Length: 70
Image (cartoon, rainbow, N blue to C red):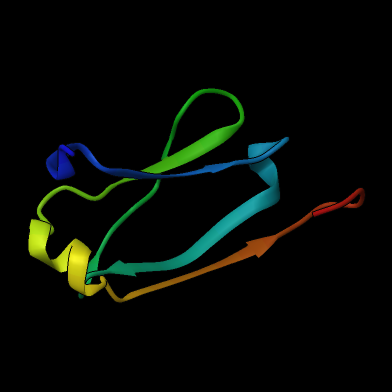
């Protein structure tokens, strides 16, 4: 595994339907960035490989807006 290139990806039908309020992973505030037309990604580099085995704490808060389904 190449942990330095790890990314968290959230795919949505329409990016206007999500608003990320807070994203903290491993004690570090992080940001999502657009990834194509229907997804956002967060780079997770910098987290020690051993931490992935032990468990990485995270707090991601977001709002979903839409009228069809989740």
